[in-house]
Length: 317
Image (cartoon, rainbow, N blue to C red; front, side):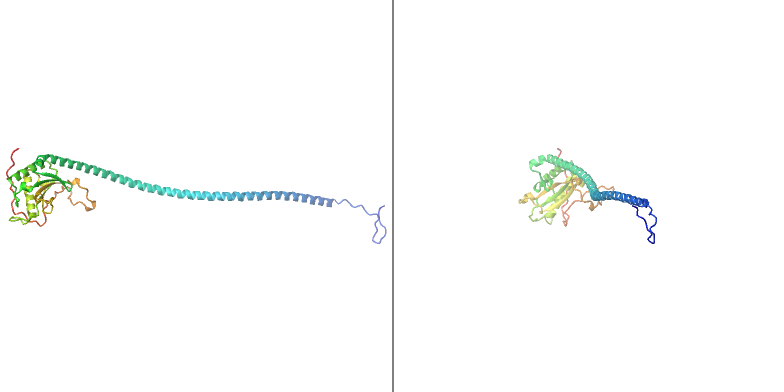
């Protein structure tokens, strides 16, 4: 049974109208439901994306760490490569310096080898000359007129004074003149060689002699022998006269100490080169002058006159 509505004073009125369907409410509810569903969907989607973004961020952080480590490793390798390159460049420069030094040393070694070869050739020539001189004097050596020995690295022809000079005198005897001529004829075959003529005496003081002492006598005898060698045809530039007195004995026997020695002097090219710092005072274009004839310092000129140029000639062979 329908329920009647009452009016303001409580009196029964007209029956109430039926309420319309709440479309707005339903529509609002549907919209809210749709909005909630959409919000949930988008929330779920956002959470998925957020999760994916977090995972991607973790991956990126991991990749970034790896890339940083790789970058650091690459920087370290680059630094090592640069250091290695610098070391190689330095090593290359050092090798170039060493190569230059080796080249210089090689050139110097070649020059030294050439000098040694030249010196060896000169030494061989000198030995050949010595052997030739010994052959030239073989007869005199066998007869005891002359003795060939090696003293201080030089060939020395020694002639006893008894064969050449009377006691205390610087004038050659007749047999002595022949002996010196024979020696001169043999030595003039070596015009490129120079010889030192040295007079020696014993330690016995002179008595009744025109010479002050044995040194003066030895110098006078060396000068006499030198002049006779020049008369025999030897070049005066190749002869140097000197006296040693009794300062260079060869034996305890005084007779062996009284002698005339003719020593073969080494050639200039046979001597070792002098330091370049000494310089060269030889005038340009001027040939080196031969060494002056050496005489003992302080010695007086011999009083006895040497034989003149018209000394008797040796007998014809």
